[in-house]
Length: 346
Image 1: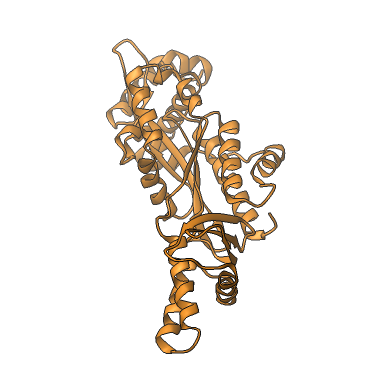
Image 2: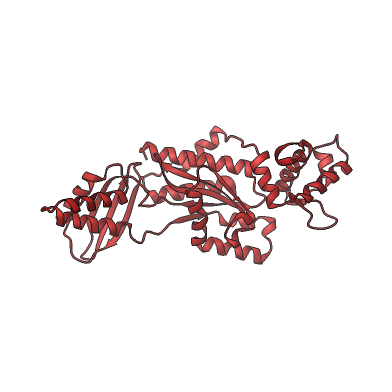
């Protein structure tokens, strides 16, 4: 017996059927398998094996006279036990590196570049969960007075990425005091998250009652405002690629899929799960907690800045997505983005 109780012959035939179905989108028959791949086996033998694979839930037959197609369980078995992951060519790696490198170090530009290159190379939809303020380790923070009610916050991460955010304030703070607050925060900021900075300020305020307390209080307030209400930004690219897949010709199916893309909170729910997992994750069809995503598969991986996981990137496509190549593409992109963020030379 082979993996999970299947014989080597059953594994071979299941793998052939999945590869053919991924390529054609059409049910695969025993004669086709015999003619194109396994000429040493008769159609009857292959048909019997296909019936056995159907009995264990790895194949289904959409019509009595049709061939078989993989089920979600069949894809899962293939991904876990049969799939080999090819390496991307050096040309493709170089294209990814050029596509993700922001010209001005802006976080948004990086994320948009990642989304664009993934959808271009995969021909499916891409999803990228952007780095959060709270999860980045920071090198520097500056506050710039805009008007009586608003301040521009400029943060530079250890990776060199720059984030900007406009925050509202309750009372006027002139630029000289903003500079003092920036200088104080920068003295305790290096290499830690803003959450850690808040803890340090609160600990010092509890220990000391000195002339810096008002400064520290202001610094704490501005740090809180910088973090509060932070939305989880999901960038989606290439959604039109999904519409070109033959299995989504049905209008109702397409409406459900685009509803999932438009309601980004549902995507965030899945991506947040991937954020907590180590390495590549493949979520197939009904494995998704989001009902509208159950005709799709997601291949995703977290990316890091140093040792800190800061975001997730991935590809969304039909269940007959080319899992081996897409897994290699996502894995490589996550590795290159992590390298870019960690080297701090963007």
